Every structure is written in structure tokens, then in C-alpha cells.
Image 1: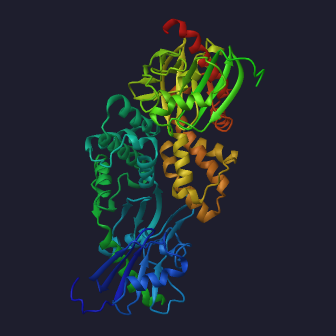
Image 2 (image 1 turned 120 degrees about the vertical axis):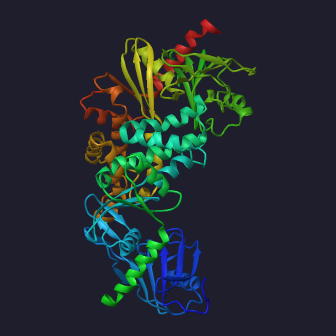
Image 3 (image 1 turned 60 degrees about the vertical axis):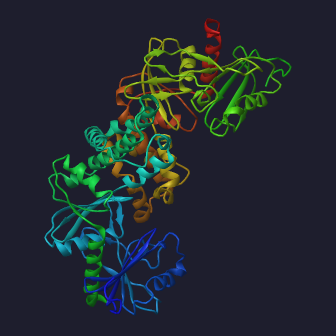
Length: 298
Length: 298
């Protein structure tokens, strides 16, 4: 975006299942940004190198720091999981056999019991700690598989993933509830009531799902209210499942402008004021930390 | 099946979303049976009459007693919901404008609070009561949307639907868990443990879903064990949600040979010996009761 003539000294890449997003960086300044729908899910193993070079064409020979599913077994090069508890600092592997430039991918994090994994979120957490090195509490990263991550003294102490985003999408688009839900889930009174209901009686909330359909048939429950209730029931359920993480804790949310406010609101109902962070700044800060650590192992 | 020369004196039809199943009946004897994949979901409104006549061709002019989604607003003729609490006896509407024969459809049942509906199950419950008029307890009908129905003194006192079957299908076939689940969910130790886990901590079970994926990645959790655990977690959750229905109650299961044993096993773990009934005999008995009641309102 600034002086196109300037060359980046490194390139940041967030390469997930659906998108490849890249930034031309000079220190912590963003010179340029591109996003293409060429996620790991649609790129064949032998194409990763070419897709990357095509996407960052014109940015010179700078090294690339990448995070996300590109480091999975089905990705470009497997960046093995580091076992938690572990330092909340990026660990990197270098992609072999890519002549065009040095490409590093951040390792994911695993937890043996209960079994859990993350890939991409560890970089965002490292970025949060770049801004707030003394952060102690829980980091919640809402998404398809929302993560709740305990952080203290620069360590990731443990974490838990909930499938809330994916379950919401499946139920609203593919189950019988699709007939009674709208795309808008912005009835905040219905959302609040459903969060409270699910937190109060998580088992009962399971039986409340079909009632969204029946309420539409019998009582003209509006599609907007039904969608808001579904969202509230699932997030309330998730809060009930992760209570040990957030009770009495400092909570930082890293997520989209759509999801983070819902989680913040649900937590506020429990008396917790969560801090919210946009995804891109912490991702870039995390990848920048990775770059700075390079001297140690490249 | 017996003497094809014999003419049925009535025809039973179970017309759901996916299948139309018909029986040529003489009293309570089945003379013939046919099943076609022409459920309500694929038949256009103006085609219902022709599809029925084609399916029962050669069975003479006998009247038809039908139950299921064919009576919904999107079906052939709307058979309105009867409000529970209500008698567990079939209520019928006659299909207008079908010259070929008399066709009756059983009304569904509604419950205003919490909102719930059934369509088809009411006929099976009436059939169960034909065999056991004094039944008092809960009838559980496992399926896409499993029903738990309180029955006492010939009345349906209240009910609750859980989306367990549909959620299991969506999670096993369309979520990230599809990578780690097999079609076989017959590891009964894993099933039992998961049922107990979800009953003990329904909220925690929500957090245990993604662990099925992570367990596959990290610990070679077998696809068969993962599928059994998913089935157990969902059924355990459902039992937690419906505890007020089955605690200390006589339980009758009406369901398929695949699903009923899972519910019976989960209930046995809670010290309840459920009676099990196959679907067809109670469906036919319920439709036969409907036929016998006809004198009263045709």
C-alpha cells in the first residue's frame, strides 16, 4: 500500500484451509497485502510452491513466514505439533526443496489429554504476547473450531476446542432447522436468553434444538429469533463446557468482527469484560516474532 | 404374501419424507407389502394421488389409512395437529378430491410449551396401546428426531424431541469428524463409556466432540472407536436432556434394529430394562385402530 518501490524484508503468510493471505512486510510495517482463495483444501501437494510464488510475485526474494493448515500432514510440509504445556513462542520448520526462497512454517500445538490440536492459533497467541508479554488468563479464538487457551508466564498451559462454528453452520444450513432460521442472527434479547438457558441447564439445551423448528411451525417464532437462539444455545453450551478456563480469569478474544462480539456479550452476561483483538495484527506480530527467532535455528 | 387372490379390506400406508410403504390388509393380517422411494420429499403436490394408486395397483378399492409426513402442510392434505395432552388415539382427516377411493391421514400431535410436534409416531403409540392398553410410562421412538413421549391412562401427557439421529449423521458425514469416524459404531465399551461421560457431565461432552478428531490424529483412536464414542456422547446427552421422562419410569422403545439396542443399552446402564417393539407391527396396529374408529367420524 505504501511506496510500491520499497522491497519487503520479509513476507507473512496465513495459509489456511480456504484462503492464502500474504503481506509484504518491512519490519512491522505492511507494504502490501493480497488474498487468494487458494487454501490448503484446493491446492495439490506439488502445487504449493508455485501457488505461493504466483501470489507474492513482484515482492522480491524475501523469506516467507507462514502459519496455518499449510503445515499439516496434508499441507505443503509437515510442521510437527509441539506438546503443551510449552512456550507460547513460534517453532518453525523450513520447507525443503523450494529453491526460490526460504519458507518457514510454524508448528502447531498438541495436547495429549484430553486430546486436542491447534494450527495457526499458536501464532496469534504469540502475537498477543508480543503486545502484552505478561498476559495471564485465557485466550479465546472463536471460529469453526473455537479454541480456549490457558496462558501464564509466557506458556500455553492447556487448551480446549469446541466445534461451535461448524455445528452452527451444519444445523442452520443442512438440518431440519434450515426451514426456520434466517441468515441474520441479530436478535440480541433472544441470544442472551438462550446463552443463559444453556449455561444454566446444558443438558436441557440439547432438547431445545428441535423446539426451534416446532416454535416456527406452531408459534411463528421468527427466523431471526430462531437463528439468534441457536447461536445463543451453542455459545452458552460452549461456555458451560469451558467454565474451568474462564471462571475468574482475564479473557482475551481474538476473532472476527462477527463472532468476537457474540462471545464478548455472552461472557459479559457472566460478569467478565473480555478484551478483544482483531486477527490480522496478532497474526503479523506472531509471524514477526517467528522471524526474529530465526537466528536461533536457521 | 398369503393367497394373492384374496382382496384386502383396507390398506395401511406409512408415508414419510423418504419412503412410501404400503400393506394390503385383511383385518390384522398382512396380505402383501410394498415399499417405494417416493416419500413426501420427492413427490409434487399434484402427484400424491397418482403415486399412491400406482403403488397399490391390483389391491382393489379398499380404503387407505395413512400416517406420517404425507399429512404435513407440504404433503398431500394437511392433517392438523391435535394438542397434547390428548387421547393416544388416531384422529383422521379424509383427503378431499381423490375419486379412486377413500384415503384417510392421521393427525399429528403438537405441544405448545415447550414447542414440539410429531407426525407418524402418534400412530405407533396408538398401536402400542392396542397391544397394551394399560401402558403407563414413557415411549421412546429413536430416529432422525427421537421422541420421548409420556403416556398414562390412554393419554399422551407430554413429549420431547431430540435431534440425535440428524446430528449424528451431520457430524459423521459432513463435519471435520468425518476424517476420523468409520461407518461402524459397534465398539460397545467405547459407547458405554461415552454414554456415562455425557450423562455425568453433559456440558463437558460438548467439548469432547473435537477430541474425537484430535484423538485420531494424536493417538490413533480407531475410526470404529471414535464413531462409537460419538454415538455414545450424543445418546448420553439425550438421556441427560430427557431425564425427567425416564427416571423411575417404565420405558418402551419403538425403533429399528439398529437404533433401539443402543438406546436399550444406554438405559440399562442407568438400571432401566426397556421393552422393545419393532416399528411395523405397532404402525399397523395403530392404523387398524384408526380404521376401527372410522365409524365415528366418516
